[in-house]
Image (tube, rainbow over all chains, first blue to last red; front, side, top):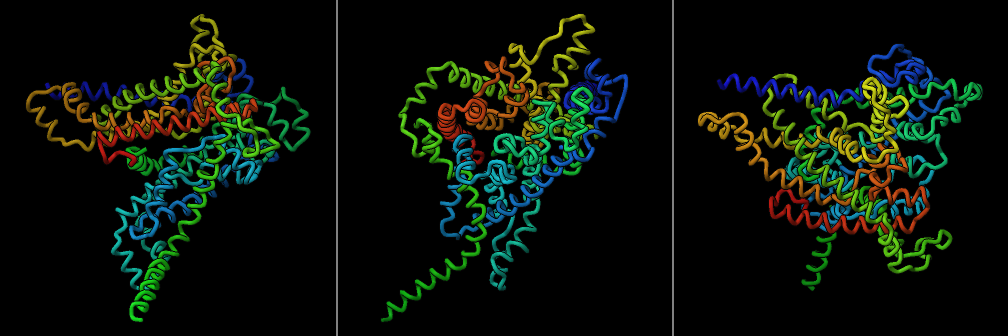
Length: 298
Length: 314
């Protein structure tokens, strides 16, 4: 009796979860299939899971040199790598300092970091600050610096990891043995904090890869600095953008008609998700752990 | 003489003690400078909400306008619409998301077998996709000319095509659906971790007493989840004045006819600043959001602290 009931529950559970899984994955599958669908077929028959005619032309077109796409892709990678490394360096160093209980002024600094989680000026003052004081408009720094480089939440999360996960006695022993603060941070504290560094690094990297807002707000003329997300964003607004940005004039001359607009857009979107899908299986456990760690307080 | 010596000794002790910390301060410096630049330097700019902004005169040189900007903002329909949309969507998101997340968490906790891991990975995937690409995915389904729904579902059924991006009546549902799709995998993780942490003894005892699976769920799991639910909900209520800009701006593709149901405080501030050049209105709405948001975060946290001090932010 119990056994049967359990089996019913298992069956229902699997069915519900299979439906949920399909819902989660199907849009991505549709995106992928339409990126390898022949453009005319796509325009005639619409998006379909079983297209009449397949074609890799969209990818050929997108990956052709002189095109805006490979460039934007490089910028996305560069941005993600720079952003994540700088972010991790400044976040860990600040968090480590704040984890020192004897540090004079520790409470004030911690409060100043914490307060940023409660109150922020919002878009208008931030924009004014970065454009009028720092002139970040139309620079790579405009993609890199505003909002994303460090956040109070990560600092405090890492600080509490240092407090609980790195025993003070070991660090003090190292200092007595003549190690400098910086050395004991690099050689003792950091290796012990690897899990949290990896988790925060992962979240930061995803944020950078996915960010379109900074480019949208701060890059008004320098479209050559567009990340793949900005390019995608621009494309959906304006298909002609690609023609205008092709360095090859004859390309532009072939005219809008021959541009495989729909499938090209889809191919670009596939390229936009691709790194995440490739990395996802390897980082998934770390990711789930990170959410559990931060989620309660998030 | 002796006391003076002691004094200098003490001074050199504090200096020595302080000196020990210099490397630490230096390590903190880059991060601290960033917080200062990114979070504190903009704050004086909030006065813009009380000014008649004049580009030539700059933020601080512009003339004072008192509360006129706010008066003007709240006289328009916009203030009502953006506040209503922001709060109504967030409330709906909180309700739908919590129910969906708990349901999924309970199912996943009960399931056995290798597939469980696969399910969890799959439903978390949408959370990692950028808002721009989500708007592509949605467009593939909703595009009027060749979208999947119009072409493959409505047409064969002999139904008329729907111009999704101009018909506002569908969008509350679409946005709630997309939001749930995107976040359920994320929000179920915390509930799942909590359920897995429960003492199995309760369940074993209930089985001996002849409880059915359904009874276990309604009489044990859900009541025991209550503190987590209350806490996460309160934290979400603290953020009720902020909206997911990408969801409301990208997914409806900034389509004008949809504004009455897609305009939130965040999109309003953005459009005012960068599309319409209405900087002062934007600044006023931004300050309104920051201020009410601050009050809400504080109050939510006070409540959380009463429920579960460990989960409170402070």
